[in-house]
Image 1 (spheres, rainbow, N blue to C red):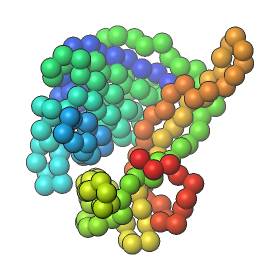
Image 2: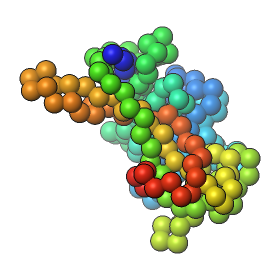
Image 3: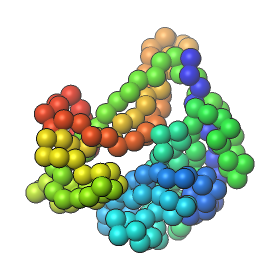
Image 4: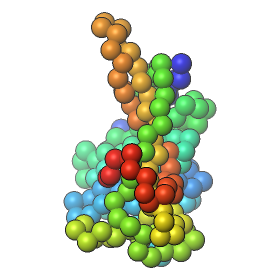
Length: 191
């Protein structure tokens, strides 16, 4: 059995949530009406490839992860929303998130992968620019792989069993990291 712990905070900005958690370094998936972007989180701030602070004013949803924890933030009014932090390590939950969330008891945990769309077009030791003709480009905080590799998102799925009928299902999924994978690997889902 694996326990997934969580705590929540209502009426906080994304910046306030990031400050409360104090990720040493993390990856942020940021959704805004005009774009989806990926940023690196350092010192409580989302940063672009140029190391500039990422403009969070239009972001309505964020998922920020460092392998041990995942922050989920969803705007409900302007720049304020609900933040939830998930982790298997309960002491990592911040006191600044006052709302307890019922722990999830998983009978099984599985590793899942999602192949990121686009091929590495350019990059350096810290960032990769992925490109596909139909969609465009996406800059990802991960060292650029060689031409024989692609990038994928690694997640952890939490499987529970329904007590009424015994069916097992994935009740939750936590983002872990981005990693390199051989380009010819085909068993992943594209996102």
